[in-house]
Length: 343
Ligand code: SAH
Ligand code: SF4
View 1 (spheres, rainbow, N blue to C red):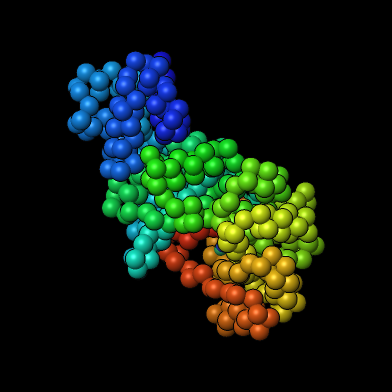
View 2: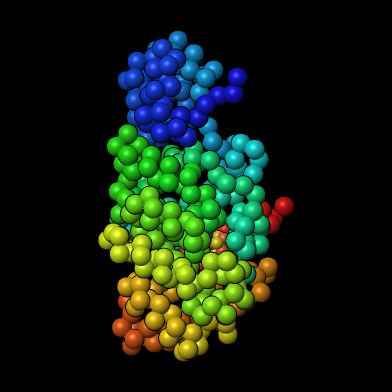
């Protein structure tokens, strides 16, 4: 009999399953408390359960999601990358970004990514498979077990979260629930390359979540050259749909703009980005390209980066520059995939 991972079920379904097996509901709650409040995933360590219950449950349940966990600290201690081997041997990565008062975890939603943006290493790796709910949640557990309490979550690791909609939002529901990590929804951001059907579903499901939209280039023709998703998900339609989405709730929208030397860094490019930001009432986050031998683009200089920021400021668009953290360990978001290329 294959064992069930309670972390893929959600608290109430797990409780119902346990009851159907003849257990009292509080046993399910005790197990979830161990996992979510104490980061314990070994049934044997759940000492308030009797030995016979633990023995019986060990045959029915498993709380393991990873076959191996490799920790890769960065030289400047600003980020810690985790290379995680899933139970089927496939690898994913997640990154803890250390802030002064809190830790943000950049999680993966897929193993690889099918979207194939030309500046992204995960795109180069290609698509392997969607992550299960428990594999998304376990990324938090694994880093917390190693001493990094997580307060903020960004879906900016490997994969396009809206292409794994069911599992990503089920995981978010569990992560934010009282029986789960009880993380605030306000501290979670889902980043998308602009998958229309996914954004439409957010509206239909009335899901209020902070979104980041990866623009690439605000001009449709230029965008199509670096982001093949533009073909069926034109930025004009995406912008309209995001506009509808924004009017239905009060969460934040950020435009992520990865600067590529000579591709999207001209004054005209930035003007088009500013128009989009104004239409969407969004702030812009400028990211310099993390270069890689497999990526056919170059980053911009720091003065070009400052120039882009100043153009945006002059056009009255709120703008921040994302510091390139953990670059020497390939840990910055958008550069995940090194572990796949190494072999
Ligand atoms: N698939 C989602 C989330 C993961 S990518 C998305 O595309 O939004 C997370 C962010 O990293 C995106 O904003 C993406 O544009 C950016 N990114 C991708 N490759 C990058 C690179 N080589 N250097 C810097 N940022 C990159
Ligand atoms: Fe996928 Fe995002 Fe990378 Fe594009 S930028 S290939 S959507 S992970």
